[in-house]
Length: 303
Picture: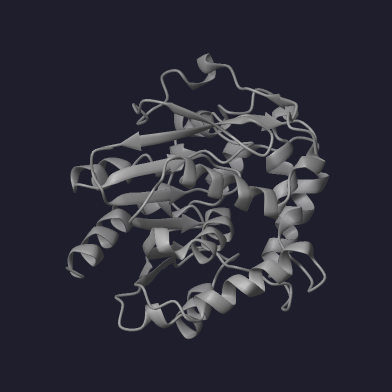
């Protein structure tokens, strides 16, 4: 792979007047590819960092209801847009994207900012990537809260609901990102909010990452990511730092995944795990404030 990766960059005017998203943009050049990653950085004077990791096909907008709650409670809040999403650069060639390169990009990101004392908050691909990064850089992380995510190794069949999503994402002529987000929510999503989720993608050429992500989930033990994920699980099976699950009650894709974490990870023992009611896959949209307050209460009770 060459040092420079061809990419598209969504025009700034696409992000004007988005409801509930008043945050100042921040940018960083990262490798591989010398690409520009966008991130939010609120209350940067705090030494305690909450790292909010989004997934597919969303962006940091998904965490807009949670960010002010964490910042007001005294935490530095970092919310990156994964490469290919949000305000970050979007490589055109689908072959650029791999599970491994996303782990590499986010590792480079947290090391470039020298983030320490991190509380990882992750959902969907934010967990697939974030949990790998935490397992491979445990000295930077102090706790984890995971929701509606998993760390697949290809050893077990993927849920039928995921396979249906996979097939749709590859065969649909147009990928209606805003409608996909709405379909993964229980509560009403307004047209303006749907527009905000569509904002990063002026046309289909900007959606290479959104298209390819479902194909990157390890589905068999021979998958290139399976070995790395097994290694990550070997670390997480010894993880004694606090680990909280807060899965929602109406997500068919990850239903029961919280039990896997709680059975395997020592740090889950004795934690106030919860199931967030009346929430779909994108629980940040449905019940973001509830999840944020649960995390804050959980952290404060550890002191």
